[in-house]
Image: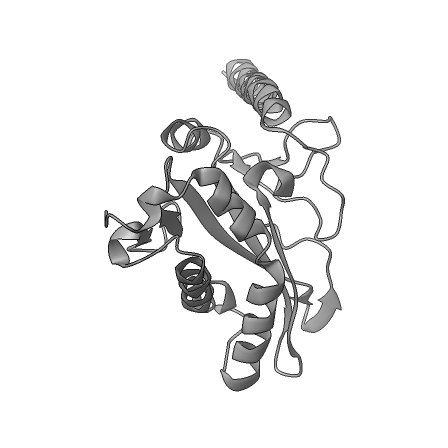
Length: 228
């Protein structure tokens, strides 16, 4: 790390600058989408380089970054996080995006949730341990894109847990088959407002999912036994 780079700035300073950058990032992405061509199928991946570009610019202007030693970009799409700012401690910044329209039975219809991948229940303990609980933030880009529309609607920046939805039983919203967490609706007020609340819900959700899986397997085994 460079002597005058990110290591001289605290994590709290970095978080404040990041959260206050919503409008700058929104303005930048609105300009990008005007002049660049994007496919609705790959937009979430294609926009990431442009988010990184403006983040680096913002952090340089605020003396959080001097050179490439002060941050790390994800080497591939499965790496977490998309952007690591090497403050003390490091700040993890993950990019998410959601289209407010979707193709359904050959027609474009409005939607309120893009069902983004928010990480599996099994993967979160390691991420939280590495980045010390409170140091994981999401940049969530809301857009409208198909062959007729091309618009960045909003940019939201907050701790990761504020973007996770709750299911009808009050647990973290997840996909049954793999435990992949799912987001809240685009403009729904977050029902998770602290890391402690997330952590309590996380433990309850893991137990809830395990019990559901056990019950399903028991039902399958009973069915097999009866057939025999």
